[in-house]
Image (cartoon, rainbow, N blue to C red; front, side, top):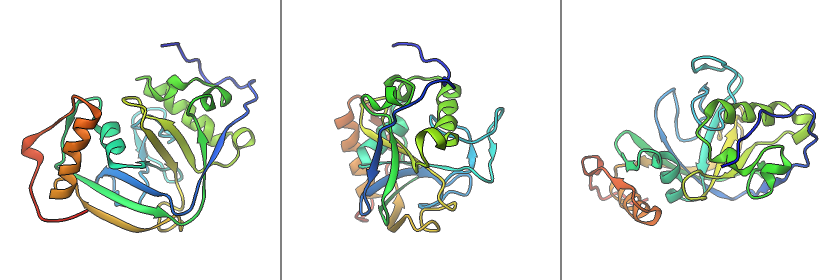
Length: 220
């Protein structure tokens, strides 16, 4: 895989901005840590790939920046969350689904979009979180180059399923008027854990930890 340099301050991008239309349904797999709920963004960071929080040392609370990761389908959320460990742990996780209330402008890093933004498609694959977070801050802060985007659209690092990193919208999707109709259930509930098992087969070689599955009659 080709190496990726730091963001070039002299590069003039020709970004691809994709509109995520109102009504688009998103799925989120999350843990209720750092005060997170179905519709809230995480202000504690940086932790994951495209966190744009400003802490340069250990992750910390950022009063002005927050992120929320989502996918179009549960299988995509599952593999993005558990692909590294290759074991799906449903205990302590929740699944939220909702529809967008307005269009979102997403900086598109798929295919040639990454190069047009000044990097390569490998930015969504590499393990160097310091570098990927540096790019996330670059994309977020340089609205003179990329416009005021609502987040990033990219292919995840495991199976190229589409994934999204949304930037804060008044701290929550509901508070910012971005989404409504959230369904929010335990990932270990019957229907969700069954879907997780199917996702594991579809994604290939992921295993569902048996102790984390609790058969219930809930539907989702």
